[in-house]
Amino acid sequence: FACDSFSQDTLSFLHQDTLQLTLKQAEAAFLNNNLDLIAQKYSIDSAKATVITAKLYDNPDFSYSNALYNFTTHNFFDPEMSVQVSQLIRLAGKRNKSIDLAKSGIDIAQFQFYDLLRTLRFVLRSDFYNIYFLEQSSKLYQIEISSLQKMVPAFEDQVKKGFMAPIDALRIKSQLYTLQAEYDNLQTNINNIQSELKLLIRSNPAGFIIPVTDISSLTNDVVSQTNYQSLMDSALVNRPDLKALNANIVFSNYNLRLQQAYAKPDITINANYDRLGSYVQDYNSIGISVPLPFFNRNQGNIKNARIQTDANKVQYESGLERVKNEVTTNYINALRSEKLLLGFDPAFEQDMKNIIGQVTINFQKKNITMLEFLDFYDSYKENVLQLNQLRFNKISALEQLNFSVGKIIFNQ
Image (cartoon, rainbow, N blue to C red; front, side, top):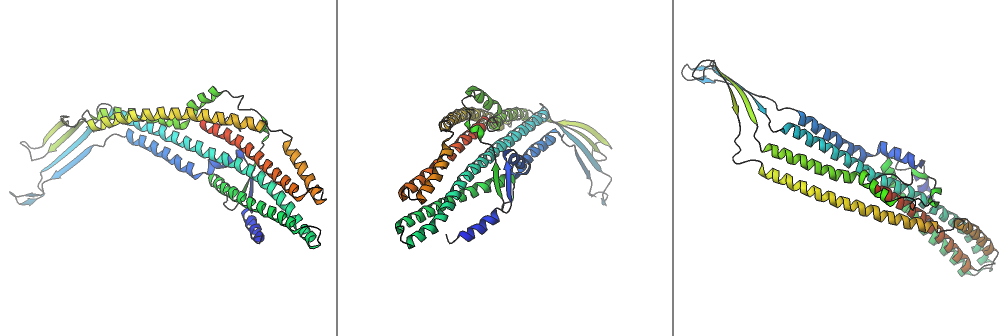
């Protein structure tokens, strides 16, 4: 291709900071550096600050007034003055109920944080394995492209000497260009996933991450040996989104109790002093004020709190059904992917490598035709790509199962 030198320069730039990472190292970088997690942690701190506010008592009120002008004596600022101090006293346990409501808000914020952690970790692990298997496919393309690039000049020379038909050389070129186009699409896909992974762990955008992992466990029948009911029980206990829905019910119950408490009036105690403005000099008094709940008994807020409680219960039941369906579906998918992969002969991949090497040699010796050679090449490529896809499908299914259970059980 005419753009080969440009592509090499670009790849050189992108790979200037090649970083080999195990899954454990990637997760550690994610937990320490991810900005979405850091931002979500602030919502927990904000909820905790709400508890501090709820614990505070109401401040006392102080008022002072002084006569501005006496029309009898024609003096400004006569000695007449009055002072009042009042304190609101909340009844019906409003303060404690407000504290309980604020504390339940902390639980919601924490469960939302853990649910975000669960979601982003799933994306991280999926991207990690996806890049690994796409890189394995990329190596296949590199080998085939390199082999054909070496063959094209030799075939063109054979055409010039009259030892080979021009159409055969064109077929090899066509195969090469097809592989290069497929390889370019594959690299675009890898780069897009790389971008997402680097954003999750805050890695150098110009760098290139090389996942390092052991896939030997893919040959094990781990799913079929795992009890389905234990996975379901684990999901019902561990899923943070389900816990958040339950915490919403607790929150709405506390809010209902608080709104019912607001229907009961509070009292205000006040102390007054007046120097000259009363029937006696230096008048002092103590008083109490209570609003009479004839009209407003907080009926609307109480009704709304009850509605919200009922709605949260329905949302929890919906979430419960969703979790059960997700676990069941992902368990079935994982079983199917595992069974399909285990059905492949372990020696198949190596046998294909040995065969394709012999095919190339025999084609160069003209023991097989051009069509047979290209057919073997396509068959080898498709089988290797399919095997890589099946391996990723199993790991992806296991990660989906981890995600639905809410706990890392597989691919540890």
